[in-house]
Length: 140
Image (cartoon, rainbow, N blue to C red; front, side, top):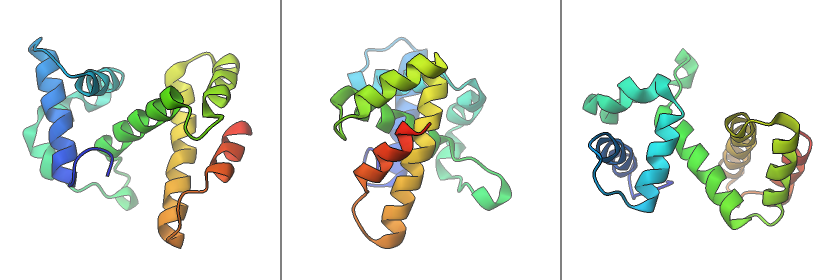
């Protein structure tokens, strides 16, 4: 789980952050970061505004993208870059920015690799392989 102990906790944090942003209320740094990710995804604004979205199950096999997972991966990548963890990811990000010039595009490319890394770790019941992750990122 990215933030919170349950899927509901995590989704609620997105909804609260967006509500605070829209009503110009004071925000914690994490809430502000979440609001910035939501702002970058106008296709999700209606979903976030709909409180029923918290209970929806998203099925990739039916072509559905889970907006909370997608935006959570943005937050995870930004955290990795900000902390340079795994070590070397900040340089990989800078190199990708030089190549693609658009932060959202670079984050999306990195998120694909992060999701694959996490899926493999879960599938194999092992910790994520940071070396393989960085290697895949360096080939983008």
